[in-house]
Structure formats: C-alpha cells, structure tokens
Image (cartoon, rainbow, N blue to C red; front, side, top):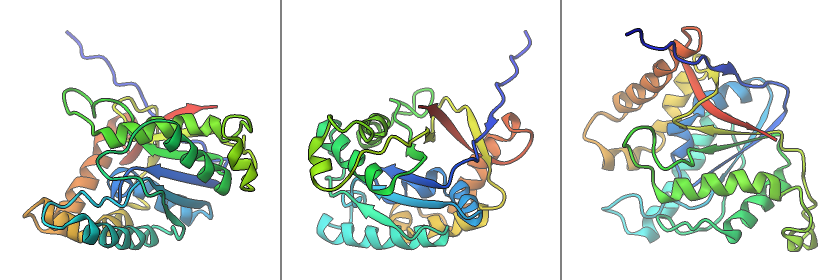
Length: 247
C-alpha cells in the first residue's frame, strides 16, 4: 500500500512588522522557534517575549527562590542572541499555571502594550503528537494566548485594561503555534540556526541539570534534528514549523 504524500508546509506570512511571543517558561522559545526569530529580527522586524513564569520549578537541585532569578537571567541572555531585547515576565507560578480569565487578561494586556500583528506561542494541544503528553503549563498558556489575541481587541471583555491606559488592539492577524503536532506553515531555519544553538546554550544551568551530554552537542543535535524533521514537507529546506491560525 502506497504511503500518502505528507501535506506540504506553506511559507509563513511576511507582511508584518511586530511580533509578540508568549510562552510558559524560560527556554520554551529556544527549544521551539528561535531560529525563525533570529531570521525575522535580521530582517528588521521587532519581536518581544512574554513569559508567564520564571521557570522556578524547573531544576530539582535548586530551590525556586534561587532558580527563578537564575532562569530569568538565562532567558534574557538567550533572547539577546537572536536580536530580542524586550523580555517581560507575568509572575505566574511555574508548574501550576491555570488557564482562565486572569491569565487571559495578563496576556491581553501584553498584546495591547506591544501591539503585534503576529503572536507566537507554543503547542496548546494535549500531546506533542502520538502518546507524548504535553505539560499543563504549555496547554494553559497556549490556549490562553489564542483567546487573548481576540480579547485584546474587545474593550468590554477586560475594561480595567482601558482604565490602565491600555487601549484595545485589534491588529493581531495571525497566531503561530510552534511545536504543534499539526503544523501548516514553516520558516527556513538555515539563516538563524547557529544563533538558535547559541541561544539555547544560554540556558546552560537548566541543560546541565537535564542531561549528562555535552551542552553544545545536545543543543545542536536537538535543534538541527527538529529543523531536519520538517525538510520533507518544505521543499527539502530545514525549517521551523508552525500551526498558523488566522484572524
């Protein structure tokens, strides 16, 4: 029986100037799509980061009060490598981030503040594909980001934001979900891949707690493998894949 031809990935839209990436933890973007972000900032586009938590529960050998500030520093360093200078933290507790109106409001406020055309987040689905279970934090933040992209444009959903001087922003045209098991679009990873490796490597404390493998070897293997996995569906070009939702 002939195997079905994989559905080809479309190029990501390019007619935008500002993007906002919203994820749960430090390193989510470095694992997910920093090669694409490096290419975008090279082209003169503005990208800002918003993280729901400091990732303070992410290293078993470090208590949260020490881990959180350290991971925040590593995140800011990783962002700088790919041309991102604005990194905000929302202060939700790592590991127990709850989907709901409080999270939607915080993300809607960030969208109103940054006024992006493109919003980026991480996989909001229950699995990474097959039986590989996703974490509750990723699911909560991904779903809340999809909702907040609309919330940000409606002055009556969170009227307290307008009272704080954050006027509605209905300019989000797309939400791009990195790490989705159902991607639809992609970006050539080649121009930004080396910086993506260096960006992920800035999370050295986390990586050294995660694996005994040499950190640079680990980062390079993970990111080049991810990019290669999209090649067949993107004209033979190593790529960062996204599931794209239009608005």
